Each structure stands twice: as structure tokens, then as C-alpha cells.
Amino acid sequence: MSKVNLAPTDCAEDSVAVPDPASPPLLDLTGCDVDDLNQAMTAHGLPSFRAKQVWRWVWRHGLTRFDDMTDLAKPVRERLAEQMMITRPAITSRQKSTDGTIKWLLRFADGNEAEAVYIPEDDRGTLCVSSQVGCTLTCTFCHTGTQRLVRNLTTAEITGQVLIAMDELGEWPATHDGRRLTNIVMMGMGEPLFNYDNVAKALKIIMSGEGIGLSKRRITLSTSGIVPEIIRCGDELGVNLAISLHATNDELRDVLVPINRKYPLKTLINACKNYRVLSNARRITWEYVMLNGINDSDDEARALVKLIKGIPSKINLIPFNPWPGSGYERSSDDRIDRFAAIVMKAGYASPIRTPRGEDILAACGQLKTTSERLRKSQVKAITA
Image (cartoon, rainbow, N blue to C red; front, side, top):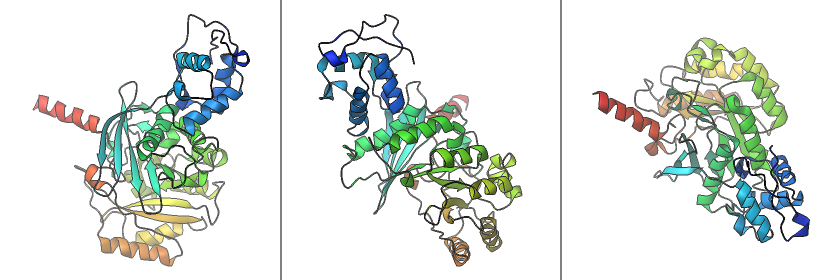
């Protein structure tokens, strides 16, 4: 990090030097962990305890203005504002479903956009967070997968989705009772493990006990099966793991989830068996979208049970959420119930996920930015 010297203040403990005229861009604190903030304070000639004070204002109280940090001397607040910033993504659009689900289309500094979704339930509230603009996986049943990958989201852009939700839900201070945002799932746009470093840093910030303090047991990372990073995730983060499975043999999974061609089922299953935090209380969730006549037979249910044998598991059966041009149909309720019965008889919990936010295309597999759809419709209108 480049060193920036600040002008002296009237507070002896915070004495600093004159700023360098070739100052770097403002440091965005929403992308900084504690070490980053400590280094910044040291570079600015400030004592390290100032980092802890600022951190708590940002992550426990949700402040965006240094002027509101009342335990900092005014000259310090002014100097920090000259060198640092506390950002939020811009909200391009906000949609609320009839079932209470909220979807935000968020715009970042370069104009790119991604979506985040809050799903309220009786006993918890879950925020679905994106890790990339677009997606590179091209899973054939997934609407998000039809949008090309633009870029990875930065740490600040990932944490910014959580801050936006907490702002709207009135979750400040983060330590208050009756928190409405209780869980985070990395199941939005993109493959989190293709952006591991930024995702990991963001999750560590969110888990910090000095700020939001969300337990790793309340965070689930969903992956299509990037095997090398699965092991790393277990070792370094210890969050819950969900596998976007959807098929029980390589031939079908190669079609539904093309990354399977690089990391086939045998390799993926071995990585999951060795996921560090597994126990009867910390199980892998296998996500299985129910596609009519494709993967929903009794034989497939029995093959699924055999595939995951010996791994502490639960199976999340997901009725397919249709989208224009998908080419797939949702399995019937009777077929899903029969599939679930076979899995449950084998001893695995297999809840059937109730689709949420379908009327605003916020359900599983439906995320795809409104702006990208608009651009395509405009192109069609021009070329028609």
C-alpha cells in the first residue's frame, strides 16, 4: 500500500506529516480487512487503535461519513475523509415480490451491474450474494449462465451487497437483537470459487466479531465443483458448502454443468469427502434441480443416494424455475415427492425448496441483470 502522509493536527497522539501531492485514489474501507486498515493508519501516521475505532463505525454501525465518527477528533475525521471513503453500490432498481423477497440490481463504479436477493422466512432471513458480473459456467438450465462473464466482483463490491441489505432492513447496529438478516448464501451470479480471493476476504470481513459478526455456520458457499478451491475453502473459511450437483453420472452432468468435464464426479466427490468441517451437524448440501424427464426418475434418486454414501449430507431438491427460452420443464409435484421419498428413506434430509421471488425473476437460477436484458431487447428492436 502506498504511504500517504497527513498534515499535523492539534491532537498529539494523532500527529501526522504533510500530505504527498501525488496522492493515490481514495481507499475504500468496505474492501479492507483489519490488517489493511491497520496498515493504512500506520501509513497515515496514525496509531493503530484508530483502525479499530473506524472499523467498528463501518461494520458495527454502518456509517458512511467520517463526520459521524464521534470518538475521533475533528481534524482526524477531516484527514481520513481526504484519503479514504466508505462506499455502497448504487441501486439501479429494487423489486419486491408478493412473497416478500427483495431483489436489487446494483451498479458499480465502472457501470457494470449484478443482482442480490433477500429472502425472508419465519425463522430467518437469507441474503443471496453475487460474486461475478455474469457467469462463465454456462449451466444449461440456469438463466444466469446465459449471460457472458464480464469480470469478478471486488471485495468491496461483494461486501457492499450485504451493506445495502442491512441498510434497508434497519440492521444497525449489527449487534442488535432480532436481526432480520441471519444467513448469507454465495449463490448469486457467478461461480464464487473462480473469484476465491475476493470472496474469501469479503466473508472474513462479514464474519469478524468486531463488526457484523455473522457466524461461519450461517454462511453457505455454493459451487459447481471447482475442486482445488473446495479444499482451500474448507481449510481457510470453514463455511458451509453446497454443491450444485443436478446429475448422478458424468454423461448427463457434462451437459447440465459443463465444468464437470474438467472436474468429473469422482474427483468432486473425493474433494467433498475431505471437506474439513464435515460432521453430523455440518453437512454438505447437494443442490439438485428437478428437470422433468431429465434427472427426476426413481433410478436417479437411488443413484444419488449411492453417490453420496458416507458423506454427511442433506439434499436440497429445487423445482426448476422456468425462464424464457430455457428448453426445460419443471418436474411435477408428484414426481418430486416420490424422488424425495426415496432419498429420505435412505436417511437423508431432502427438503423441497419452495420457489421464492419467481414473479420478479429472483428465484434460484433466474438471476440475470435487467440491464443486460434491456440491452439485448434494444439491439433486437434496432435490427428488426
